Image (cartoon, rainbow over all chains, first blue to last red; front, top):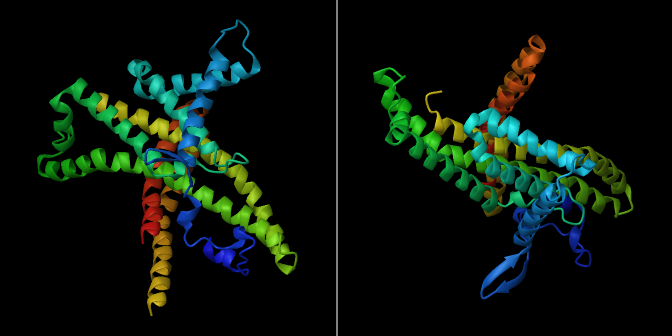
Length: 267
Length: 74
């Protein structure tokens, strides 16, 4: 990002053209107001907004059930039905209906947060701040570890660190690898996957669209490059919509798979 | 001197990310290729194969993503 924008002279009157000192500045949001030393910044407000959007969408679609649903109602119903049938029931099994509310709120919240990255005037994927995907992954971690312990008792831990299906000589090694992958790598990769995809998308769009606009605004030879650059940004923009939906789906799917693996560890 | 080391560090970080992307790139290719083959052979199992394919992609992709994060940490 820095080098792209540095290609033109930094003009203090036009702050957008000045290179940010580091890429981190793309993800820093200014504090809007603070309550007793607890600063509330834009990302937090957007998170609240995402939750409100999810609640509003579900309320509008489901508040008054009709015999013949509206177009909007049908669309929301198909999303909810997909999460219920394919993710909750399809992956976890018949007892997956208990986890359906969590999975649905996870899916819709992440989806709206991701889509903020390509919404005009907002242009900030909230999930590109590590705290949010990591918190969601931590909640998922607690759910699958606690449910594993509740359902299978101590056998859950024993099945991981001392797997009986493996030859005796290999058990310590496989157990160690399984222990790390279950309790450390699973939540970490779950969070990092969403985070890294959103960071990459946000940076790509910043470089292509904002960088392209800055080049176009120069009104000389660079403008041609800027137009090409901006034109490349438009398909990437459409691709980001796809990535936003896909990452929300994958996060929810993996959460369901992890719950399923700890409920039925023998599979 | 200080600036040179900084530049060298970021260059190596970029190379590291490139190296981290090779394996998962091949891996995702294999996963998707075989999934397409399975869907072509038995179109009625396409839904199940697609779910499993996304799972496989997600697990394979994690390595590239760790490389991506290390690129920022470097």
